[in-house]
Image (cartoon, rainbow, N blue to C red; front, side, top):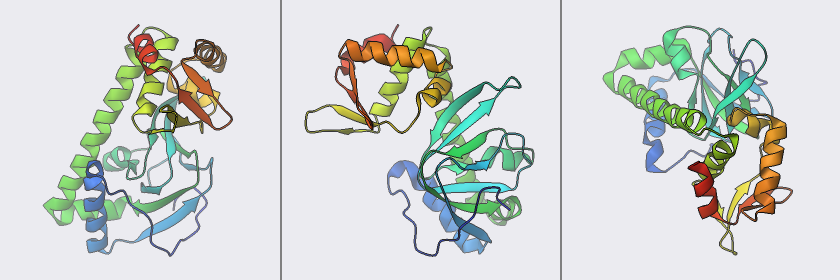
Length: 238
């Protein structure tokens, strides 16, 4: 059974419709066709779906909301590898390997998930080639995303450049307001931002303050506005 608190939800859930998530729709189709037992659940903010090192039980399909995917060292240092989005299949690689989960997934807002046990997932793959192909596509996309994140974490030499990379990455998924500024929802703490760029909270605080003084960004209680994207791109190249 899933480790997170479970509340069964009966109403239909929203699913992504953009082309980048076609594999998600295909997987749902295979699950429905197999009549595999699964549990649709609601999780509050800050809940752990599964923890690094726990024995695998199955995968969680993220139907709404977002979650952090992180790893940690024995000393307790945490690195957030990515932010899971709607349509992500969480824990898939570990489930296929039949080992313990290799990361911790924690919600950053209210989420709805669909849990599929390892036995049912293997059954879907073995029943027909279509199911195996869909899961292969999902793994390929996840690997590409993790490679991009590793590049942004390891290649920039300074924390300032890594922070600029992260803000620019968020810009791609953010809206432009009436003032023609990119607005990023400020739903991660400075500690979590630090974990995404392999730095400290104090460094992130200092860097954000510097960007604000230089009028490159503007921070409010719930948003970060990108005032000078060109300047941010120059910093990211350093």
